[in-house]
Image (cartoon, rainbow, N blue to C red; front, side):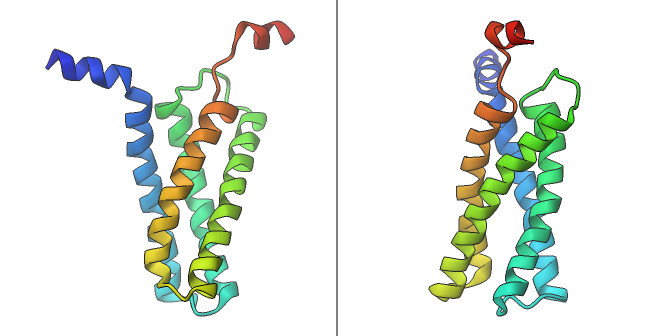
Length: 147
């Protein structure tokens, strides 16, 4: 049990990221599938991307709140700059998401539901890297000296 606790403490950030990343993916998929099963047609490239954007907005908002508090444990005041950096980094992976969905579904003719699952894995890895090294990076003494 002690060894498990040690491993948890050592990999806490990654474990929490996987948990909340998984929940973020659920939010994204629920909104996406909700859109395409009710009022948007994934056969239309424009409506496919509209569903993608709606699912992105819901997921990123959920991710920002949970990543800030539970994953990266940001001690900074919740600032516009931090939120803007988070949404900006997620906009980058949204473009990746949209490009992958366009290629897989519109160009290659893959099933949009299966493609969305594959794309979510790619996006999740990209989001972790951007969040860890650009948005929620730990302040160094050089950062504090510049202020």
